[in-house]
Amino acid sequence: MTVVLMLGSAPMAAEAASWPRAPFHKVVAINNAWRVRTDWDAAVFPWDFPKDRRPVAGPGQTMVTEDDFVPVQNAFGGFVYAGATMAFTAGYWALGTLRPTVIAAFGCDMHYAATGQTHFYGTGAPDPLRKDISLRSLEAKSARLMVLAAMQGCAMVNLSTGPSRLIFPRVSRSAAGLARPQPFCPDTADKALAAEAALGYVVPSGRYWEESGRFDPRELDRLDALWVKAASLPLRQTA
Image (tube, rainbow, N blue to C red; front, side, top):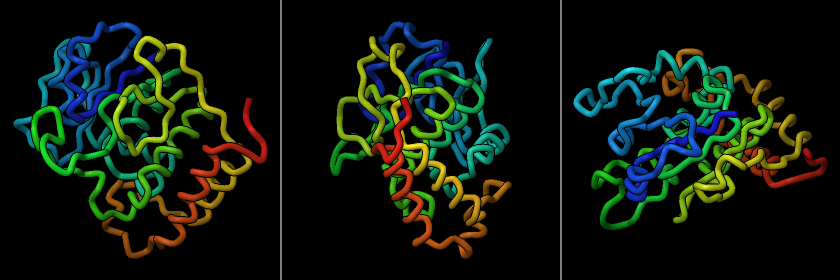
């Protein structure tokens, strides 16, 4: 059993600095979130993350870059289907690499206040809200991650209490280790996976924006609707 804390940079993320390690076996920090806790296990950041903001890995700590997460993301269908923002990228990397039973997100809500502080370190760029072919529905992308995780026996949960674009069930920190995968509709999930395979929107390099002309937003919207439906229950439901 492996319970992963996936830590983002929302203002509330600073609360995690004082949390005890239990019930988490691994701490995955996204972008600047390594600054919240010194006991992180993996720091995940993209190629263009400023060098002066990157951590220095200590014993037992790993820095996860595109060389590591692009192949894992491709194994789960690639960035166009998964959603090309770091909360999803880190989630798929953790799912594929750590093979956990629970991934508990905190501070990864992709909801930004209109005024004031947007991140625990101040004001940052709301990357998930950028205009991008892979991010037309953050809710649908979170549904996809939750369903694919459930297929692998992993529960995706949200420890945050504020507004969120994630559709993961909310749990308390103390209950995170007891979480179980959400039921989903396997028929609809299979239909979504078959549609993805038929479209063939996989870019092995991860540089999907270089091929954006071949991606039909209407087809991606249909896919998003299927994933939301798969996560919203059945037809035929998993136990």
